[in-house]
Image (cartoon, one colour):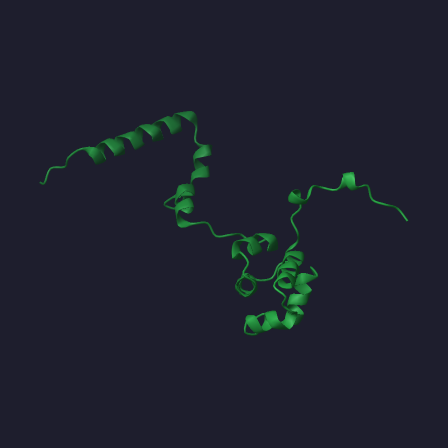
Length: 137
């Protein structure tokens, strides 16, 4: 029998538990059985299915299942999405910063230095024009 060297282990703060371990820990901390979680989700998440998720046999349950579990266990829906490998929706403000009328800002990286200069000059022109008083004509 070998003994693992504790110095090989990562510090506890560096570890992120799997979705299954996280859900099982939360359920047990709340003192709930698998059947009670099924009841709290109004049967939307069956106890057998949750057992498979908790044992990591199902690693990526649907966002709907995660939504129901987050409500039943008082967990962060976004955190569950991330742990399951789903994309987390970003606030609209952040999306607007990443795209202009559907064109991703990363497309600006493909511009030549001359094109970037021209774009900056044009943006300055548009801002200047916006500030000028307009004739009522």
